[in-house]
Image (tube, rainbow, N blue to C red):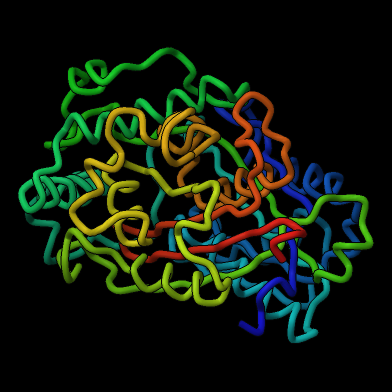
Length: 382
């Protein structure tokens, strides 16, 4: 509880998204996002003394990023735990600010995955226990979880398709979303099967893009001409690396990360107004909503069905369109933070959730491996 509301996000921004102009590098997108996020916060680059970043392109991403941006941070964290890295960085940065080690943290990411041919870059070596089975990494791993959830709890392909449809309905309200054409359940079910039971439209987009988040102390945040989004709680947990070592294909470490985040924030799932989840595949929101406590284990399929997550549904989830329809440049976690903050600021236009005061951002890394949860609140919740 000592970290609750001691820090606040004061600036967020994306780089150009989708398919960027030829010749731009991942660091160019980092630069775009950083300049825009600092402008959003009303802060100068010289005020950044903590840098938090991860990359599939640069093994020493902290040094490459600092050099490109022309900053000399006193604290660098390049912890890489997949797409959850940036939500994890929030907790690390808040701890450093609270301890007085740094004053302002920049969390940033950039990728040109789509322009580079659409393949997911990974520095990981093939797992020798899984390689003989020639699984399609990472989709086959998520397909295993989906198949097991269907077998154990009766979850249907139609319910998984409804996750993609809900994401698209939100994306159609977001001018920055990559995919905005109408989408139906039948479209998802009839699209090309990639790894049974997941079709092409059960899978996230492949886009270019970057994002940046600026975090500072709560006292400093209140001095700026911005609407702060206070970090109320955060928690992270890692249970495995390879899917063959996952203790239970239907239960993720979000049970731990969520419990820790809610305990720090002093909130319950019923207190959350907006939920931003890492939806690399349609099974992800089903698992995370269960594990974070929004519904009981095994009830996720019914919980997400028939437009429940879409505009006008029972729970606003992935209001920017998510990784399924908005953008997905290899590691998506930073975009859950950006959208959560914008919803609390009331900046989301047609997709704005009325009266949003609390928001959850959840990152997933690896193959359901690392889970990190963050909870934000407005001034009156703080």
